[in-house]
Figure 1 (spheres, helix red, strand yellow):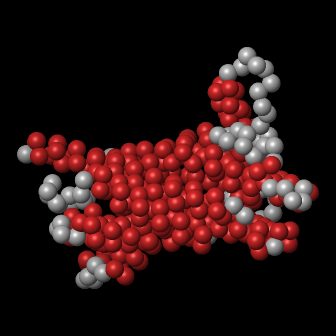
Figure 2 (cartoon, helix red, strand yellow; figure 1 turned 90 degrees about the horizontal axis):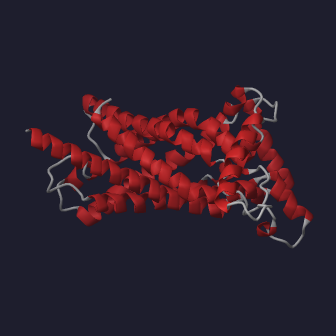
Figure 3 (cartoon, one colour; figure 1 turned 180 degrees about the vertical axis):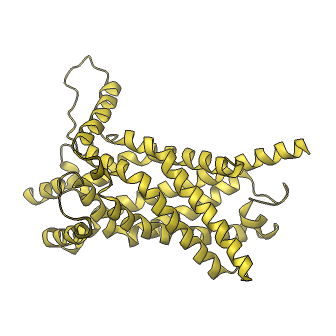
Length: 334
């Protein structure tokens, strides 16, 4: 494995694990808000709020096991595919004699994000199906005063994942939500990644424009004097990703709602995959109206904005640190 690929894997996995641990409780609440069970709770109790549901805050880390297990291969698949697709597109532009412009860079970012998402979703789909179903397993409160709360909660989280897995009689069902996952994730990445790269370059140009072409792609190349510091790389990436993620989450909120419902039905429905998205949209509109498609939008926007900022900030920071160490080793060898 090349040094660049190893750096990408280490950076993406570090960012992914930190993000999963930080945002999973919020994601659990979002899943429950978007589920049929909690929607029915609101209908049968006029005047109440979703926060009065007895299970809304219980077992917030249920399903975390499958996500942690998938974080390394998923993050690696996405970022390695993204970085190398970008570099290949840039090489193709040079061969064709195209000058690198803002429009060409946006197209490059869009294509790279789309290809990377398709690869990452193949790895992530089973974990996502298990996560959503585990988050809906009823959690009980400790009934024995001598039990340690932490152990009880940890045991319930693991038990919920096992119970969710038992729902899938055929392992192929774990991938039955792949089209819905792609239908949600692809637009998010297609919107977020070009915005992220654009904001990142604009911020870097504004703050550090005097440095050599913002050190040719924000510190990936250039001399030590020209490169951005690790803190600058983290801050620039985090702010850019948070703004881009917030915008992308609002624009794709309906598909996030549809994806949750389909993932919760992944082990139970016999409907062909091509019809699931259409049937789910029709069901939501019939039972909840157009507002139903935006259920959980606020919390999802917060998760994606904060999560994206943390994710890409750590990714760029760790990658910058790894690249700095590699350059130090090379200078010592020289």
